[in-house]
Length: 221
Image 1: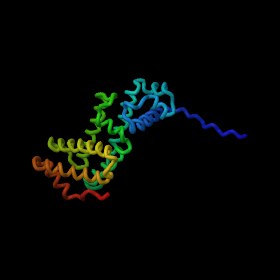
Image 2: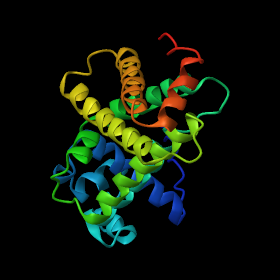
Image 3: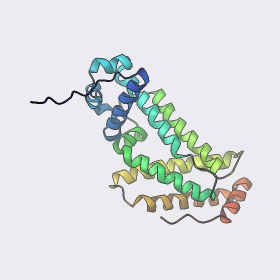
Image 4: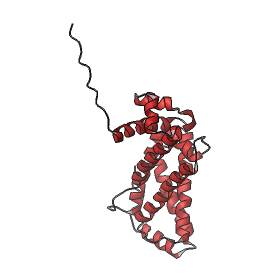
């Protein structure tokens, strides 16, 4: 009887192994609250032993969670990148498409992250999350072609980002309804609406609203 060939074992480099473990952890944290994920779960998902997980993350679950959160933050930051080839609102629409896709893929983990209350939540994890919010705001200023936003505009954008987060959580809790494209358009319309309110009190925002009025409306789904 002919024996089947045994797959050749390839030793992973340090970075490759870390990447493998982080990918396994992210997948688990995406669908389970952080406190419900153990190192044994991560080891099993990665196909390695628990001691090996500890070798790369000697700080245990807390260190692994923070590293996974940092990796997720990098992925989320990439959602905000968009070439300046179309109108500002069109760019914002595509950014929201990618953001909602990220929320959809990370589901329970995203909700646990934003709602807080996790047993592994620390000042460092909170800082990572707030860093994503600050990055999102800076990208929005760029997409709106505003180089030096004043306090009223900054406050308006940060308030809208908070509204987007809240809408995302409600969307997950509502079985992801309405459809993503409909939610995206609604969020863009809300962005314009809050800008118009601020425009009544701030000249810079008023100029931005006037500029946006000359560009194409939100693209159809």
